[in-house]
Length: 340
Image 1 (cartoon, rainbow, N blue to C red):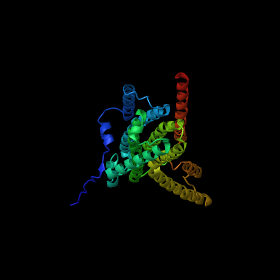
Image 2 (image 1 turned 30 degrees about the vertical axis):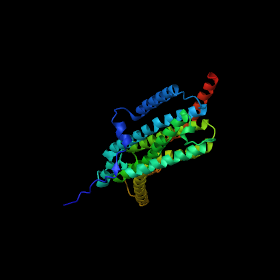
Image 3 (image 1 turned 30 degrees about the horizontal axis):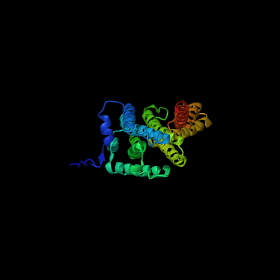
Image 4 (image 1 turned 90 degrees about the vertical axis):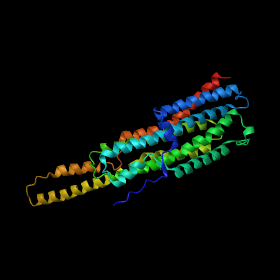
């Protein structure tokens, strides 16, 4: 009698995902609602407690950015988890449902609790570092010295930093799982890669979510003292956007390369056979021109299943943070002209 291995209890559904998925609304729409609620609470408290007293325009703008990040990051986190699960489901018809496939597919959307904990603590450590290197003239952790806006930042900073770190952690782990799912694909037709479009869509989704995060973070550049930190974060986010695009496709790329090489070997052998038959002037039904045309077609197929529109779209994604920063600068200049 075969023994059934019990499920690993260390793999859990992230609590953020459990909360968001109880509400039948798209996570990104829920994020917009959360941003609205936080802004209403912030401005109401600012009015009631005279929060503008002792605050600076810079503190006010930074708090708004903190609120936007606090609303966006957990929503993107849950959206990513849901998208990964859907991609695995969409790939089910083209894979052999082996034991390996089942184990990986069942774990998509769940993670080791200690991995999420370590990722979250790392995010808090980054927030502490960022706060210390961008605060001048006061102790950022002395509650008595901070104004109303700064207190919001001290509370929200560790929250969204926790979620950012968990988002990047989940992006790598889930993308690697999707890559391993490709090992269960029995055969690939290199001339028809349409069944693997879900992996391409997931790669673009990963990149877009990271770029969306970077576009909000880029607003920090409008404030003095953030240049060094922004260079570090921009480099980090660019790396994760590229990883998010490429890692889910790593497994299918290897499968495509193997299938392409098999077909090319057949072409080379067929060409040798056809040439040999021509030399001895035997009649053959094999057209050398057709074989060479097929070989040329195979050689032009990319191992990475990207077409030019996909690469163009990714390049345009990378311009979103620049547009966000320019838009923020225009809004700030407009407010300076309107407000005294």
